[in-house]
Image 1 (cartoon, rainbow, N blue to C red):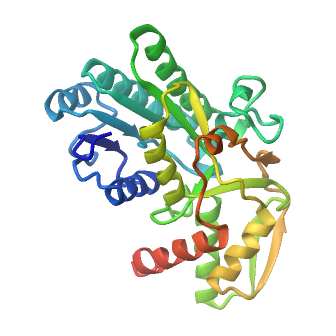
Image 2: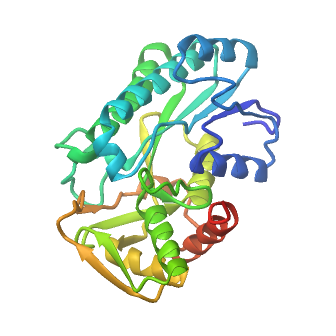
Amino acid sequence: MKQDARIFVAGHRGMVGGAICRALKASGYDNLVLRTRAEVDLLDRNAVNAFFEAAGVEYVILAAAKVGGIIANDTESGDFIRDNLYIQTNVIDAAYRHGVKKFMFLGSSCIYPKFAEQPIKESSLLTGVLEPTNSAYAIAKIAGKEMCDAYRKQFGFNAFTVMPSNVYGVGDNFDPQSSHVAAGLMRRFHEAREAGLDEVVAWGTGSPLRELIFADDLADACVFLMNSYEEGGMINAGSDQEVSIRELTELIAETVGFQGKISWDASKPDGTPRKIMDNSRLRALGWKPKTTLREGLAQMYAWFLENVAKD
């Protein structure tokens, strides 16, 4: 991409979209096209088409999505599949029809089968059943990936999909009802410490294994791929840092400074038992992450204290 290219980052106010904007600017891309939902509602096909007609966008990174943790996915599954299908369909189709040169769609590792062979290769897609608590979201993301592939095959549209592992970091969502695991735990431990509590109860057994990638590392990978990846299809983007939920919980408690007891409610769901991705294709292209989990959590908590805890 030329330095003056007009790049539309959809979802720039979210954690991943915001990190991508920072990465692009750090690489000298200053001609970013950014719109809030009030300016362009991606659920509205006519609004999306009007935007692309007027904006002259050359490149698109679609990071906009309705996202949430295990509770939100399980209780709002209709909203998750509807909204994400609308967003993807509207933006992918409009980008193709208005001559976008390259299109990146951000997926989610939850698209892979619940019991996929580990580490999970891109070829594992659609080889087994999904985790039921987030299957609606996963199916929407699978549809977006398939739409990119279909438009590439039939129309020659230069679209591809990036599948991140679990993302955390600066700008994360800390809402108790919709946050992902790292942000949800961080807020709970912070509030417990502030309230002087001597115990925090965590969900499940703590045994599931997860691969977490810092949002700014993912963003760096996205900019790298926009400039170097031409194969289409999808490519995994993870950190290769695997941690159990129990270890993650203890590390977040340490980061926050909570010194009380951590107990586990095994009646609550664990979700997928293990989820680490095979990132060998991305590594072979020459990219690797820079941020350790401990470093990333420290940056995340500093942002939380400055932007969330003060509210």
